[in-house]
Image 1 (tube, rainbow, N blue to C red):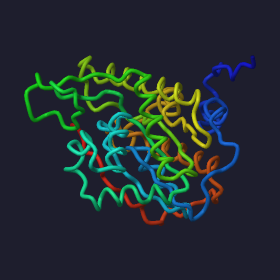
Image 2: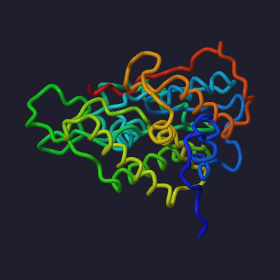
Image 3: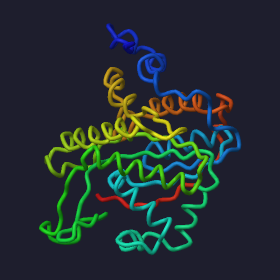
Length: 294
């Protein structure tokens, strides 16, 4: 078998972050040809990366619709149930879970752009979810009753991978020819829940999702891609100095400069548009479609 790139032997490579990403992270994740073109419609779903890449693509003449999902509600399970509800608003327990967040018109407005899109970029964020007891139903905002009514737990990687397969299948049901990009958000978990430490719980949560994505891509359908924004921020970023809160002192916010690098590389390798965008272009339409748990 052919081995991959060796881990960098010196820190000098990190003086040029973009070159380091090109050499050490992107191999194996680049498409054979660009799949986004000028005037295409792209739908992004998820949290931070969905908004950031949406804004960047809009600056390059691409029509973008952002369906923003709070980081803390952005699990594969919640997203699968959400898409099931949007496709069929009568199905239970999805109707009970989501009907208060969507009018029938809002549901259609969320689904319609997917049917017309050339690409859907889907970012997942957490693998921990809360379930109402008894009944074991997913709960989005578990702060209104006794703690005895709820059980928090991490998904198993296989469960999360199955949810990702269902999400991709539903997107393809709506639009058979659409390109799909899956990403893992590098934004940390909002709070510690099971381990009490936000750092420990975040490590477990992201690890489950990254293993689930690995399992998914072992037999992924054609024209489904992974963009390694998580690895860029969390792994290579550990060699770059502070990569969170550098502009606003908020330790869950990825630095603007690293976001710029990530989105620039995405535009370079996944689109056919000009590398020079219009920074005065209007921001994309952003819909807030799932609430924060915090």
